[in-house]
Structures are given as C-alpha cells and as structure tokens.
Image (cartoon, rainbow, N blue to C red; front, top):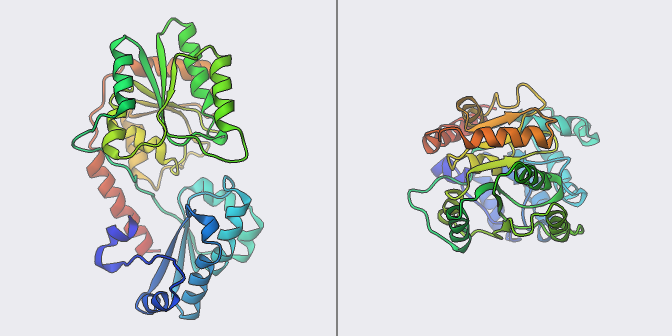
Length: 330
C-alpha cells in the first residue's frame, strides 16, 4: 500500500530469487524499503537479507519498518535481525515498539537514525456492504433483542481476547442479554488457542452467546459484520498503541470502541487519526490496568451514547500524507 501511495515514485519488487531483476530495480532507485514482519517468513529466510545487502553494496539507502519487536516470535526476529543491521534508517510503527527495540542488545549495533512514523489503516469503510453468513447471524441475534459486544482481529493469547468474554459474563450477570461476536480467526501455533478459548467460553457460561467468524473475505463483508455490533471492547496487555490496526478498523465502523489506555502520555502524538478518534469519543479509553468491572461499566455507558459521525476516510488520507512526509523527511 505504501508503494501505491507513493505513486510513480515507487516500485514494488517480489522477492523470488530473481536477483538480476532486483539489482536492476535497485540501481534505478534511491531507497529500498522493507515492511516487517513478512507473512510467509519461513519461505523468505534469506531473500530480505540479500536484498538489503545488495542495496548497501550499491550505496542505496535501506529503510526498515518493524511493526512489532518483543511480541515477535524469536524465529521471526532472527530473520529480521540481519536486515536491521544493514538498515540506514529504522522507522517504528509506535513509540512503544521503539522503546522495546532500544533496550534490546541489537540496538547497540544498528543505526541510531530511528523514527516513529504513523501507520495508516489498511481497511477503510466501504460505500456498500455485502452481507455474509456471519453478519446475517448477528442480524438475527440483534432482532432477538440481544446486545452484541464485538471484537475484530486475529485471536491469540497475547491479545487477551478472553477479557472480552469476561466483560460479557459480567454484563450477563447484570441482566444484559449479551452476545459476543469475534470477527477474525484463530492464530495457529504451538498453543491450543482455539481449545483454550472455548474452554473459557464454557467456564463463563457463555456457550450459546459467542460466535467466531473465521477469515473474512472482503472489506464489504467485514463492514456488514461491523454494522451488527453495538460496542467493540479490547483489554490489551500494555494498553492501546498505534500499532493496533484492529482497533483502528473497528473504530472505522462508527461504533464505540472501549479499550484500555496506553501507558505513555505521548503515544499518539505522531498519529492524528487515533488522537482524533479519542478526542471525539469514537475510541473510549479506560485506565491501562482497568479491571473487568471498569470495562463493563464503560461498555454500558458507550451503549447509551449517540453514534458519532466521523469523516474516517478523508482523515485516513491525511494520515497517509503524514506517513509519506515522515518517510521523505527523515
């Protein structure tokens, strides 16, 4: 997407061991930019390093954008490490990620030319939605008078998704006819993520009150699902940060998003979109170390609030302009 926004100034190159083509592309460029982590990292163990090394041999600038650090599996960090050592500039997606990297041993042998740049949303509201089986299920649930508590994004332990289940259990205890909708899929790994998730559902007595969509094919389907959610809720391990694209996408729906605040006071100084959503009440912050009771109280208050009209797409475009300027002027 960054290459698309740069227009004719940028060219994308697939790392497919076609090094003659890569060298030609690099000779005709001033900068090579790497956006990490990569998805199929096991198939790309050497190519990012070789591309960065080629760029440095050709005396080109190498910019690396790491979206995670401590949260990355050590194997992913091992793939990223040699590229970072060759970087002439490192641009972090959040000040919290920059802090994590700064205290790592690797920071001592990498460039001091480091910045924090705003990462714009990769999912934008669509003019038209496309109903899918999951959105239709939620529509029926709402027609039955249930309150739909939502969460968007991949399901994995570090995200503390079970906190949303605990909030639902607390609301149910208060007499709210609640249903929890997870728009996303389980991250497969060594942990028994899915089994543990549904064990928690059962333990909280929510067996008939929780549904998981699985992978959603398109933004049109995703925003059809979002239309059927009343309030989104997150309790993140270290509070909200600007790398949380799932929270930004949920806020794009126009539905209130309740989430615990960042630990830093300046977490969003570089990210106008997050800051505006917080200022206008689209994102409602609770204390960083808030408990389930506090979260449930804020969800209840958010459910009674008026829906906020926010010009998300124009503001997202302004954020892209911020991101391009930050990379250009670094």
